[in-house]
Image (cartoon, rainbow, N blue to C red; front, side, top):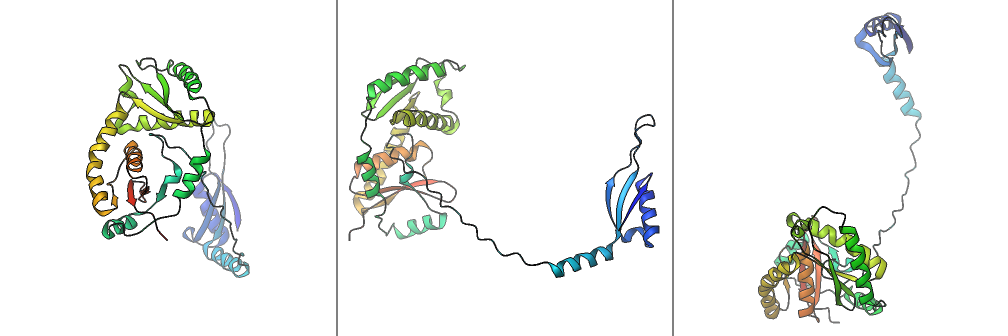
Amino acid sequence: MIKIEAVTLEGAFKDAAAALDCSVTQLAVEVVQAPSGGFLGLFKKKAIIVATIKNELLDEKKKVATVQVPETPKVIEVAEDITPAHTMLNDTIMPTSFVSDQDEDEMEEDLASGLDYTADYDDEYDDEISEEAAPLVDIQVVAKEVKADINKLFDLICFEIEKIEVSAYDKETLLIEFKGEDAALLIGKEGYRYKALSYMIFNWINTKYDVQLRLEIAEFLKNQEESVARYLTNVYENIDRDGRAQTKILDGVLVQIALKELRERYPDKYVVIRSTKDGLKYIIVNDYHNN
């Protein structure tokens, strides 16, 4: 291996070939510095290369390979990602404990088998958590504070909306209503903005006040509830006839509304959201396992 300096790269290559007594095509070259003409004759730079014959390079690699000691495989412990169980039962935010994963193959098996299985692994735990999470706040006081704060926040946006109304929907849930000329713009295409606002507002009020959220924007939630109610008519018939059913894929807030309706109508059945590997969600209704 030699280091060559020359005015041009071409000259450096030729000098390296001459010094190593081989052709240019047999060289393995690393360009350390490219040549530069400088400015007005100043700051010129020569070409600098490090060259060796390719065969020698291969021989060196072989020698290195023969003395390499195989590395001991490292055992990496992967901590299990445990998501805290949420106890939220509101209309717009999905409780984590209600969601389980399912790939497309499993979904096809469910459809083919008519949901011929039972489940008994998490609802008892959910019920225990719900019982422990008794409301400890004055919902009316919270509603007044949230109303003042949320109106201050949205006074800064450019949308034409009316004063945001905040009231107690029940003992542990706030109803927040957006109305006005531009309120529908807060819903967004396919409800994407609605969903984003739901998570943003919920994370705020649930973290600070430990309350749930029902978000209504330009009657969007009302229209979604009516749409789900019409669809669930056939699902109810299947459940009443067969004792079990499975909904179609439901997107966004629809799956959350459907879950609430099905759980209220069938409190003694196992009602759970399942997901495909693509994140698409649907609901399964079945009997609990009886020992």
